[in-house]
Image 1: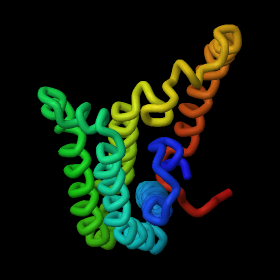
Image 2: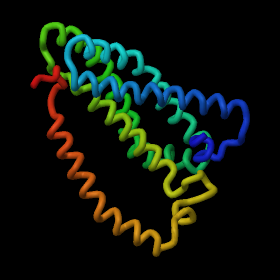
Image 3: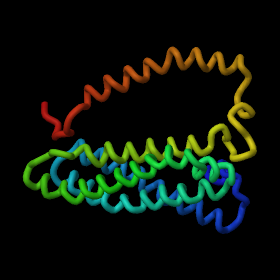
Image 4: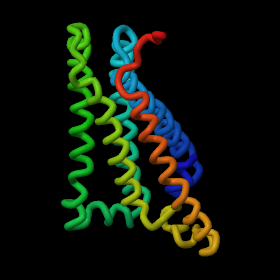
Length: 202
């Protein structure tokens, strides 16, 4: 539904199937992210299960990224021109190239990690998670670049959808206060829970 809202697609059967495919692949993308976190944070049988979960999620995640990448320029001639006009195509080429490279690194890492783990070697356990985060960031960057300044392609831009300046000023002051607290708490939480999760001992 979000994809239909953003793209302004007409409501027809093909769009519903496309939205269902993207939703299905997105579930596996988050499964890949969660499995990568478990690979990094656990040991033993659970870690090996997480590797299998990540392997089962990898190609469906890639299929979702590919489907969005094909559909985005297709729904709007403006986005097509923004992607494939010269010199934009040269400046944007690193995004799909790096995304493909990250998927290949994840695949290679997942094939090697079980052997390392069985030997008691935890080297590279964080690679699948870090690379998956990289895929998410690159995907969001590509989508943001493609859509800017539109929230609904060729219909509503960010300025038309924005609140009144007075309301935005109140939000700004709230962000100035709250955001550093959130960042500080997140850093503190990561420091407390750093390292492998092990059996609880008193």
